[in-house]
Amino acid sequence: MLSAFPDTGPSLALVNGKVLGEAGNYEALAVAGNRIAALGTSAEVMARASAATEIVDLAGRTVIPGLIDGHAHLDREGLKSVLPSLADCRSVEDIVARIAEIARQKQPGEWIITMPIGIPPSYEDVLAGIAEHRFPDRHDLDRAAPDNPVYIRSIWGYWRSSLPLVSIANSRALRLAGIDASTAAPAPSIEICRDAAGEPTGIFVETNKMPVVELSLMRRAPHFTASERASALAASMKLYNRAGTTSVFEGHGIAAEVLDAYRQVRAQGRQSVRASMIFSPAWPSTSAEDCRALLKSWGHWLAGRGLGDAWLGMAGLYGEIDDSVERELRSQAFPQTGWAGFHYNSSLPRDALKEVLVEAARNGIRAVGILPNMLDLFAEVDKAVPIAGQRWVLGHVVSLTPDQVKQVAGLGLAVTTHLTAYIYKRGSELVDKLGRERAGEIVPLRSLREAGVPISFGSDNAPLSLFQSIALAVNRRDRTGALISPEQALTREEALECATLGGAKLTFEDSEKGGIAVGKLADLAVLSADPLHCAPDELARIESQLTLIDGRVVYRAESGGGR
Image (cartoon, rainbow, N blue to C red):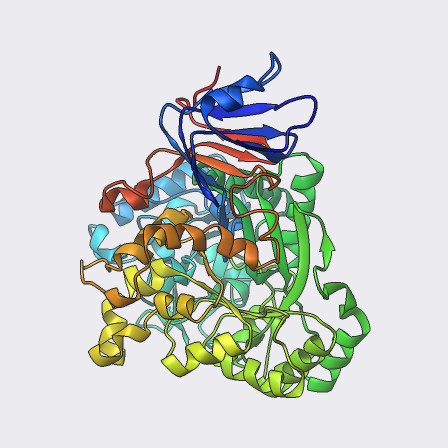
């Protein structure tokens, strides 16, 4: 038996199961305090138990390290329940009736903000599910709530793979927003739909994945409040715990309002997911010199491991190349960020961003980028100041050529990828785009692994479970059933490692978590099925029945077991 028991013995023992340890499989494990104290047979572990030890009979179930989501947007899941849902509406009249019902609970003049029209989580083929095959307009919403401003929000565009986004306002909301026949669309990507007389119909259509209308034309509509964000965040954590997730890495950066929510949840003792966050700067200027000087003056706290502890920390900064008009429009809503949870003015023109990243590298501040154009920029920064050893992160990896895989490895980067988007939703599309001869470049997990690149899976909150990512890494089939570059598939063991140890490597915490070994943090998940041997179509549906963080139970299904 591998053990490091304190004199007091274990506080918790998991017995009669299958424990997937770093050095092999075991029948049981024991926890003392917040650490794994022993691995061995059930008899060996039970021999050290006392009357104070909680015993969990695993009844043959599998125990894995807690999953670590490398690109989570954890806060969004709970926010989806803050606004009234229209998911069960199958006609314009259903929508009118639902909003009329909400209006009866509101005071005259009070805003009504709802979730989008359509069926979550992906809101596909919205009008196919509406009897009239049209969106309601301002006149329909006026019938529902003549005394209240109404705004039906659009989806966050990454919930599905197609555009456009549609949001709808009634007449009162349009008046409050100052929108009339003379209002021009603020960007070519936005359409203010109009009737035959040129008056706005209340319907806004935009070809942006990240909504612009609600942050510009309709920014008078209420946003999520601080208390709503905190409550939603705590609820999100429980949902991620149910999926077996115990840690998240917020690689897209965290805005001030989301950081405040984390701090509030932490202060209330409600935090049940560890969070390592990247800073989302709100640059007040796009001047290269201004931004570089600003980072030099205050950015030292982001260097290395940054600030915080094993539960809540922030280090490094997010960077993105963008000088579009849409960036400026979204930034007008600062400090509000809507669904994003990151500052829209964290992006900069390329030259300015390069100056910032060189300064970051010079000061040991790691950077994260999620768009393909960031790889070349990272390489340019490396020529000025070597970044190998800092483990910068290239996120949302869609495709990489063999030369780019070598480049990623040479720069010492870690990668995260969102397999639901790039294999399941867009796999066949990407094969058509690249050509079958280059299909092996699509999310090339095998090539990256063989090159020694740390790989982490990110859910992107679409959906939240990393078991979907694990299944896609193994099975490599898109939603049509097509097999997408099977030569890039991982084994189940390798995929599970990406979802656990790979996430820990993003924050240099692989000696502390991401695996089951004596002395490591007791972040664990007891699963509904064995991920190494269950049927292929069952892999994505696995849930946790018992989730522990720091040796403390944070989620227990009704059948979770116990003494």
